[in-house]
Image 1 (cartoon, rainbow, N blue to C red):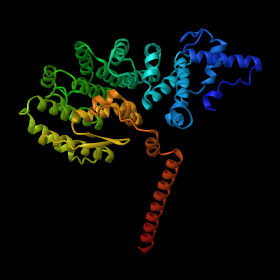
Image 2 (image 1 turned 90 degrees about the vertical axis):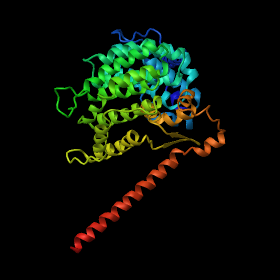
Image 3 (image 1 turned 45 degrees about the vertical axis):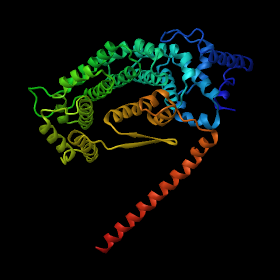
Length: 451
């Protein structure tokens, strides 16, 4: 029997008959998709039926821990949908912690499996819950709600449904991004999610331009001012500026050529100032954005000429060979690797092709536009990116992969590694590493004794 079926058994605190009726009420409430007498964010006590139902899903965050793998191995699509119905109901719970965990569980499910039909029927309910959590929730709850809105649009793809979601949630996300009293982490998450949702669902070109302007107003605050020194000092807002810059760059890839030209004229000579920021993530974001802008400019005009090319290449070369001792080794290694590619793109118009494997397929990332798009969606979907590349028609269209490849059950079984096999593999790898370290220590000890 699946674990979620067992949760409907009577609780020890009640009598046998009362517990049975409570379980039946909980099951009925779950199947209907709505609670009876639930007043979200109110001070009234929850009803007995609601409390009984909530206790049946007492740990909604467990879905994130178990993941879809448990459902694949032990359950069915019906079990997954049953659990998701319960989590959707819990987004109306009085407890902020319960609501947040429910949102997180739904987000992880949608990031890991394609549930288009299930979500299509409940998109209004989910949108209402996300809107309520964004408006009245605290920082962590707002972040999870924004992330769920993003994954919801990825599931639905472009169309009237996603447009309605963006129309409802877009103004709220924009308000949070521009709200100086909101936490930086919340504003940062909302900036990324607003950019991705707009990339998917924006149908009105004026709305797209409005979103670009909103994001511009955020990251341009990091530009080097005339009165400043040659180095931009990072602030608590730097991470917000990075997310806004990357979201802005993503949206620029779907703008009409006329708008791209305007943005290039406006930012091409100011964006390099971000390369002098003392935050390594800002330097990398600025470098990759510059490489993408050069790619767009040369795509429009093959003989594109940049006036300050010499000073820019000198700056890029310095970052590609940076050896400053006051910087962390990990940061220097990461920076040098990125800026070698950026320098090659700017100077030689070259891009090092990357290969992404998923299932029996592989995708070649052969441009900065494609790389930036892939990195953005991977940040949102995490480990579910490979599954969505296989099954999500929207993402397959974005990366020009064609229709999903249909595989029979036997082929899927041969491709899948069981949890036990993965455990054995990890254990063997751990033992091998331990043995290698021991040998290395023994050699050092022998050398010490020799001297």
